[in-house]
Image (cartoon, rainbow, N blue to C red; front, side, top):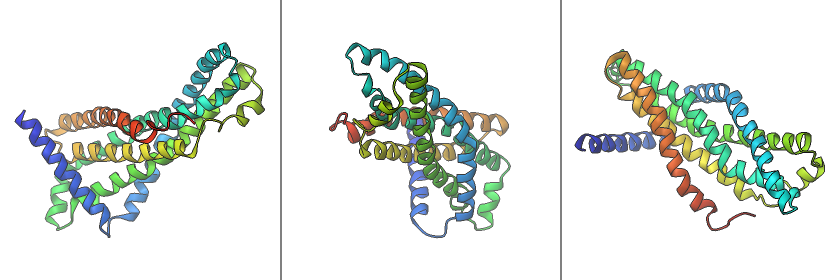
Length: 251
């Protein structure tokens, strides 16, 4: 109990320190750009490969239900709302945690075990600013990009199923795409991505930064980074959905 509270307090101080360094100037722009590019490149294909078939399944199941009520033309609206609001943010950020979060934890954990972070501090270089802030900012910036990619993939997957599998008219699918979808849905999904990216970056870097126990400790840090980050942002997703969409419903 006491150890858990101590860890929570340490994480709060860590997060506050990172946040302060983000809003103050002179953080590593070049290093941040490198991590953003690596994260997007590493996650791009997995995001497309995962969200695209989810869009196909959504269209396949939704068309059968809508056909009962003679509302097949609204299928694309269902797909777009579900993809923008929920599917793409959650699925894409899960992959960001699995790919990017694990890499961040492993890199910082190895640096901690090999005493590179200690050496950085001895040379009067702020290790949080030099090594943690670029990774957290990269997760913040890359996640919305990947969620947008996932959203496009999911809608395309729904199109393939609706038009080429179920035989729905192509024009009907695109004409009704925005019937129940508003810019709030798109913006809300990107807000979720930004928040989830921050959670992933902070949790992953925290686990790696404070890793102990040699190679086994780095392995535990990587595992904890992914599990904790995904668990936390899935829980946070409920509250964000309530805050962003709870009052407006659909349309």
